[in-house]
Image (cartoon, rainbow, N blue to C red; front, side):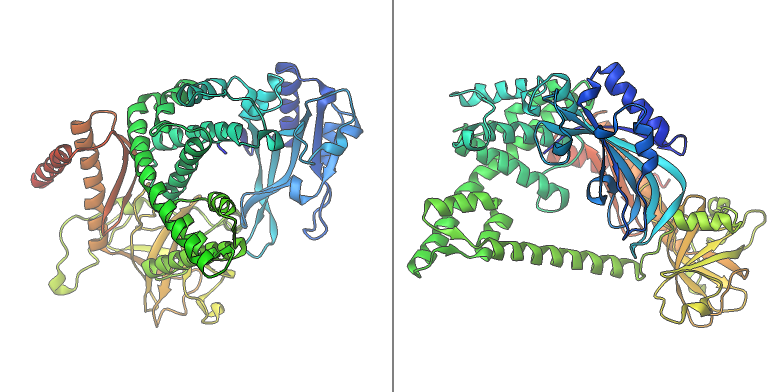
Length: 590
């Protein structure tokens, strides 16, 4: 489901006490919620993690709530993590009892619809490494999140988000197209015909797709576009199957969504016609897909029945899901109507097999592209560098780019040698060497098992990847001989990390050694040309399509450029105009 998240943050400015004080003031003083309906949770500690209970948070809440309304929970509920690795920490949730006048402590975190979490206060103070180890962050931060729709239901005293005035206009817009009974708020066994469920699915997905398409995403066969395509197909199926909605009904909801959310997201209002056009085309295409899917299901059913079976194979159900856009529940419903069942376990295995194939393909693609294992400096590593007195990397030399073509007859691919002060190579000193197992004093400590190595210098002439522009590549040449091939350059805080492959002869490099930074001139020139062309393309798009052609991102590498933008459908004639303008501009030999 789509929801809006209200958030507050602090990056080292304040921590638990101030966050709890402000949360209490907003809920009880500004929103005037009854304190006896509020319950605060805190982290109960975890022996496996080696973390004690967050008694500090408990004591802070005791200033506002009785102990019976301050409840400890384990890491499942009260330790927030953004993923397998990254920043994390204990959290304190605020729960609200819709009923009131009772002790609802046993219903907190018990999936009771009338006792719901409305705000999560996350105290970001740890970093989880890939090994699972927790380390203290150099600074403590705050990240809180409150669901807008939930909070609204509490303020309007409604038992469901869908009963608030946020959704009423959308339900009315659906009813105007389908007729029959209006939305009645039925759930579970009371909604056996799934009519009200269909209403909720449609309005939720209409909000999701309107915002996503307005922001530049479009339905497609891969990545985020595939997610959007499946969301749209689910909404259309519910409308056609449960409500008898006419073809094209879904895209007609976009103006109502824009009216509902446009004040907070003005870009939606500006993009209504484009969003409608995208969804209209996708909806029409799915109407044809539905027909093909029905035919394919009929063939599967005939095969199963003729063989004396009663189960739709999981692989065949997954084919319907993957290629025809049929959710599993639709296949199950159709099977049930035919007196059959679906091999759900086989379906899930086919799904997992596809995910693993996708993961393997992505890993292989990244490895082939860079030729190295990725290295990164996270908070713990940058803090360690600071503690060791390693000064920030000075990268001003990257701007001293010598233009002009290299003399390839002399093997000159390294013309982009620059310095901070005088002409000549950029000489630097190795300040840190980093590998998959941490920092070392010299390459000889890495025991020959390192596929890649990260080098931090006091100064560099290499561009780090930033703003959609790929990093420089080149060489670091130690004074002792040999070379390190620089394959990737990234900036982490104040430090620039050069990820390298070590050539024979340079495997004795150690901290304190001098190196010469040699940037591959050809590679940088190609990136520069593509980056310049990105700006020319942006200009040409606006010249032809108008100011509504908003840039949403770009990618500039030595091989190609990509430019992401929002606009109404580009015609073949407009595309030709854009191409001509770019070509004419570049022909001026900038």
